[in-house]
Every structure is written in structure tokens, then in C-alpha cells.
Length: 367
Ligand SMILES: [Mg+2]
Image: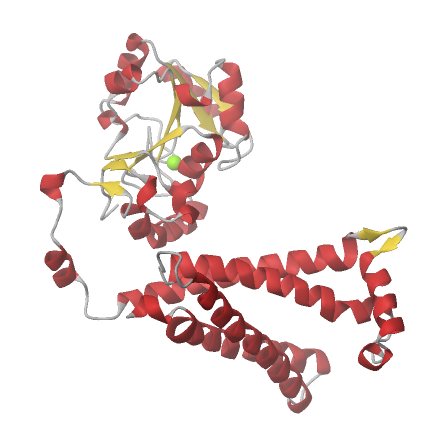
């Protein structure tokens, strides 16, 4: 894995949204994990990932030094345990037998299930355990979620499971952000001019912002859709649904405004759906502010919030207008033209929102 960097991390250096993905340390191999130092800090239980951490994917021959490292850990007094959700139970059995350590199987990482099972099995507290693994989105995230110190090791050479490749791609996107939390020894710190000189001529900041903006948009879409679902179809009001009750009241109280609605439910859609959108927009505001556009400090926050909502609400109106205009104009089956309209509208509005946020809502951070 090219560009892998080792050292200790300080989460305080990066935005809170990244904290779950930041390991405590990174090492080239598990052989580099300082067992004596771990023991002196009160660590007693070592949890191990299998593939590309202690052995190559699919292999049954441990790389040089791994068996000895495990023996040394045991001699110091550590308890060790493999966490694995593999379907190849026989291989796992043989590996753990060769090392003479136990395994815990269960729901796949980053679920907390296996970590908790291991703590229970060995009667240890979170702070007495460490997790060693090669993947941010499973090993490191899972350990961090449980409050277990996570050590990230460089992936071993060799082939990988197809699903892991998707994780690796996402890891690469996240890596440069995570490395900002890396504490480099003072004498190794490259100076700013040197970093500046190495930057490729293309505007990598803009590219990174676009990628982050799309990821944030995805999270907001999920929040919007999920909350709309809950508000409209789940939340009760007495013995009815909230949406039915609210729609009935709106139609009764404001017939001029809600007379178009076929029934109580459809009358409530713009209000409750709109509320879900506004909450989802707030998610976008927080994430885009801190993560995408890296605005620091609190001074201008309220002004940015107002500008952000102005852009977003204009974006939402544009979305509705473009969707309805196109779906009426495009000669196709009504469902298809609606779909095409929605896709085009989403693309146009994404460009609108990104540009508006970059150049207007969070502009002070750009200069
Ligand atoms: Mg692995």
C-alpha cells in the first residue's frame, strides 16, 4: 500500500466527524507493535484481525515473525484473540490452532458485537484491550466505536477479497484527512514550502471539496428520506397518524392553501416533507462547513447559516420547478419523464448548491 504512514495520532487535530476513523497508532506491521510499551500502559488483551494483518488473504502460512511475535506476547502475559466473521471456519480453526489463541466469531466489523463478545470472554475492560487490523472501515472504526485502542497496520502484499477493494477505495479518499491527525516527530516535519511545491498543478482542493460535497449530499438524502418516512407514515397522533391529523387540520383551517390536496395525507406532505428537508439541510450545513469547506472558528457561523439556507431553499425551489417543467415537456411515459426530470434537476441543483456554498455561504473561508 503506497503512501502508508506510521506514527501516533492525535484526534484533536481533525474535525469530530473523522474521529471514529482515526486510529491511535499506525505501524508497518504487527511485528512493529511495541508489546512492552502496551503492557506498561495496562493493556492485557490483544484483538487481532486475520486477513492482511496476521496472514495474507487465503493463505495458511504465516509470514516470518508472526508466530514468534504471538509467542512473545503470550510470554509477556497478554491474552490474544482473533476476531473474524469469515465463512471459512476450517481455515480459521487451523490458523488459531497454529498460533494457540482463541477466536471470536460474529457479526462483521464495524459492528460492536465481536469486540464486546471478546471483552466478555476474557473478562476485560475496553481500556485493557487493543485491536490490531488493516482496515479503517472495519477494524479501526469498530474498535473506536467500542472505546478500544485501535492500531492500524499496513495491509500485507497480495490479493484481496473483492468487497475489501471498495473499502480500500474509500480508505484512500479518507486517508489524507486522517493523516492530518498524525503526530510526526519534530525532526521529520516537512516545511510548508516543500508541501506546497509537491502539490500537483491541478486544483486538488476543488476536487476534494466536490467529493466531500457529494458524500455529504448522500448523507443528507438518507436523512431527508428517512425522516419523511417517519414523519409521514410512522409517527402517531392519538389513534391516527400525525400526517392524517395535521393534514385534516390544515385543510380545515387553510382551505385556500390546501384545497388542492386529494386527502389529508397529501395535504401534510409539503409541511412534514419540508420539515425533514430543513433538518437534512442542517446536516449538510454542519458537515460541509467543517469538513468540505473547512471553516474554522465560530464568529461568522450565524451569517453563514443564513446564507446557506438561502442557497439551499432556492435550490429546493429550483428542484421542484425543473422537475415539474421537464416532466411535462419530455415526451415519454409520465413515470419516465418524471424520473428524467428528477435526475436532471438533482444534477443542476447540486451544481447550484456547491457553487453557492463555495462562493457565497462559506466564502470567507475561501480567501
Ligand atoms: Mg483485514
